[in-house]
Length: 409
Image (cartoon, helix red, strand yellow):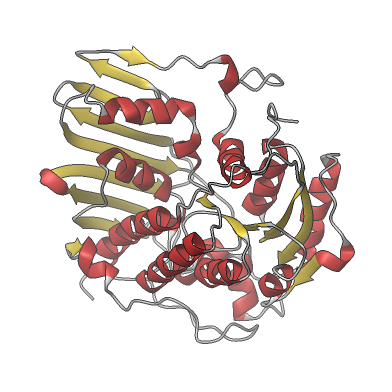
């Protein structure tokens, strides 16, 4: 095990095995299946679904190599194709992990709620306002069904971040006056097109670089810092103004997304938060979330996470319960988020964070659209927008790529 396991029980005191299915056998999906096994006792991964059979086999091999007694994947519960997510929901699973590219997340989420499954879904949960509203709608239906819903915003589940944010909310840094969040990284990955591949297959395999699938990288990755900011500010932004472009990744291989953004988010009380993200090969990286107040500065994410400077300095000290006895390090939030969801389900008080992550996904989309258009955009206006990036057809074949966005055009 990668983390200390704490026995969990369902309401009523009876232990029961929780059976899990995974939709989306990429790196993050495989990692999430690994994480759920490490999070709690009496958990089994029994079913896999993906667009492509080769990805299912790769995930199955990785999980089997883990030699965990909870890996119980059966041939009859492995599904591929565009309707694989529907088929897996008919399998005898209690809990589904939704980890196919974000563009698929709203319809997959809606189907999982209708099927009555507890859901862990990766962030972001939508790439456009139409998708955001769908997640909010079905999140409310999930409440009626008493289903547990948690997204992959793991920072919210780490004791280090939770205590830091609580201290901010308790006034330890005074009134917040500004913030700075960054997601600057280098090379990621790519999937070159192969002979005979249709537009649709290549785009899905190379999904990160197409707006309808990833939402652009400001939405797909920088959403972590946007979520942290919405958490700290107890609000979504009022508006955003931004710049961005495509300077280094200009070839067809990189689809139609940008490679850098800088956004000025305005929050209530005219608090401005600078958001910066870029992916340039060969450049130094920096990931952080820092908030300045009238009495000090709080570091929630990044190298100094869990630190407050100023009038009342403080530094987080992990407790024994926060440490993985196998590694001696703090338990990773990607494990804790599953542990928290499973604990809530077994206590009969399932967490439901669908609306929160949908609203934060729109925070990220707001920054993207401000950069794409060159306009100042209000959050409330974007929420009502009919912008829908979905393809005309979900089938292998032609799928025209939208031109790279040009501000002012």
